[in-house]
Length: 80
Image: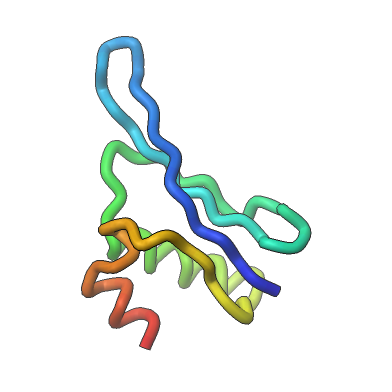
């Protein structure tokens, strides 16, 4: 099974921005996690992925875009 990562962003009426990290099973489209936060770092992404792997097992592949959060040193180290 594969997992897909993507970010969603929006703005509150008071103009404060927030982002949501969505982690979804590529086959079943089941959502593993939705992580809302004003700012999501690469370190936060790796913590969420580690927690999902502990609960649901390791995915065969993880698909993502090349956003700055997903190409950070924390994520690259976690991948190794």
